[in-house]
Amino acid sequence: MRTIKHLGPAISFVITFASIVHGVPVQWSVADGGNGHYYEPIAVGGVISWDQANQAATQAGGYLATITSEEENDFVFAVIDSPEYWYSSYNLRGPWIGGIQEPGAVEPGGGWTWITGEPFVYTNWDATQPNNFTHNENRLHFGNQPTRVPYWNDVTEDFPEIKAYVVEYIPEPATAALLALGALLVRRLRN
Image (cartoon, rainbow, N blue to C red):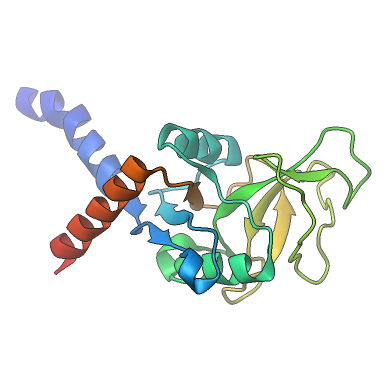
């Protein structure tokens, strides 16, 4: 019994670590009309708050994805359009992205910005969104329908039904090489 107690935290760490699902970083290449950035979907074992996802994205060397065009939205949605990135309740809740509403903004649609400071010009809100339903919905994620959809929804930063986030990386020459090597390793491990 003493051995099991001693190994408990280690086993717990392994189970927690194993429950995180990292997608392969996918580049939206300039040749395909993209921005050259990489997007990586990450699912955690349970739920994750927007602030936790934002911190994890920053620690990984990127930031929560910012979406500035319909083409970018379509690309990012294709990267996350898989069940492991969606929380299932009465509606499906997709990954966090880098939209945030400034404190004191006019509700429900005022003061939205991207965490990078990029202009918040393009939007892809779901039909009745943003709605500030609980009076403090100031973070952004994909989904809010019975099926996976590329639309956005506003929720609280600690909304308890989101289990994934999308990290966006701007490649520098060394970073691009490391991401490509990592993607190659993941593919080989899966095969």
